[in-house]
Image (cartoon, rainbow, N blue to C red; front, top):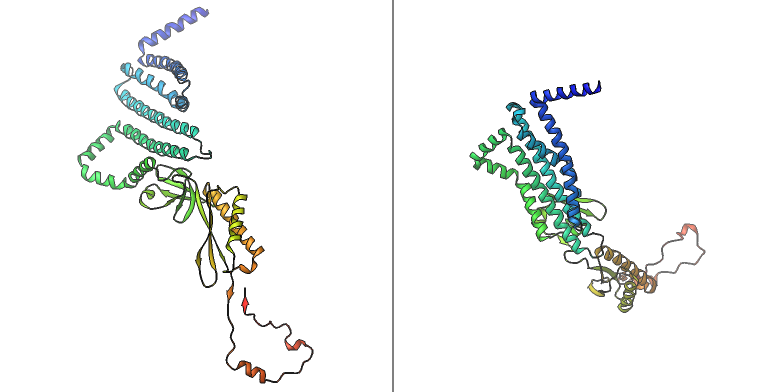
Length: 396
C-alpha cells in the first residue's frame, strides 16, 4: 500500500513538473538556493584558509560575512530567473528583474561599506591610541577614519544612483536634466555646496593633517581635544566635558592653535607678583626643588625671571616644561602654590604691598602744641572706647 502511494505521488509531481512552468521554476530556485548555501560555505572556508597569516584579510572576511551570506544566493537566484524566462509572463518578469537588480546593488553597496569598516577596524587595532607616544597612531588613525568616512559616503551615493538609474522614470528625469544641464547644474551645485566643501575639506584634512585624533587644540578660546572626525564635522571634547561641534571646512578657513602638531611636549608659564624686596635666588632654588620633586616635570626647562614691574611690585615669570599639556597644567598649579607658600613662610614682608604717605597740613603741629591738654581720667563707655588706632605710615 505504501509503495502504491509513493508511486502515485511521484506520478503526480512528474505530471505537475511537465505541465506547470511555475512548479519547475520553484524546484529550480529551491535547488539553486541549496547549492548557493553549500557554495557559500565552501568559498568562505577556502578564503579563510588562504587568509591565514594575513590579519587584514581575516578582518575583512569577518566583516563581510553577513552581506556575503545574502550576495551568493541572490546571484544564483538572478541567474536562475535569467535562464528560465518562459516560467514567468513578461508583465511579471520585467519588474521582478528590476527588483532583483536593485536588491543586488544594495547588497554590493553593503558589502563595499563593510570592507571599508574592516580596514578602519584593522588600523585601529594595529595602532592603539593608549600608547605613551601616540603621534604615529594618531596620524594613521586620522587618515584611516577620514578617508574611510569619505569612501563610505561615495559608495552609498554611487549605490543609490545606480539603483535609481534602473528605474525607467528616473532615467527619463535624468535625461531631461542633462538636456537642460545649465540651469539644473547651477541649482544642484548651489544646493550641494556645503556637502562638497565638507567633503573636500575632509580629504584635505586626511592628506595634510592640520588636526589629528586626540590633538590638543584651542578653538574659539576653548581648550579641548579632537574627539571625533566625521565626514562633515569635528567633535572637540572641552576640558569640562562639553562638546564643541565644528564643521570640517572651518579648519581650512580659520586659524586655530594645535598644541600637539608635531610633539606633545609643551612649556607653560606661571606669573607671580611679589614686592621689590623679595630675594630671587631663594625663589630659584625653591623652583628647582619643586620641579625635581614633581613627576610631571620632564627635566627640560625650569626658569625664573623678572618680566615686568610697576609702581607697586614686580612680576616674576616661571617657565616649566612637561611631556604633555595635561601634566604641564598640574605642574604649573603645583609650582604656583609652592612658590606662594614659600614666600609666605620665609618672606612674608615680600608679598605685594600698597604704599601710601600721610602728611600734616602746615601749622597743624603748632596749633596742636598750643592747645590745652585735657585732664586725665578713667575711660568710660560714653567716651567711644574702642575707636580705631591712628593709621600707620605703611600698610600691607
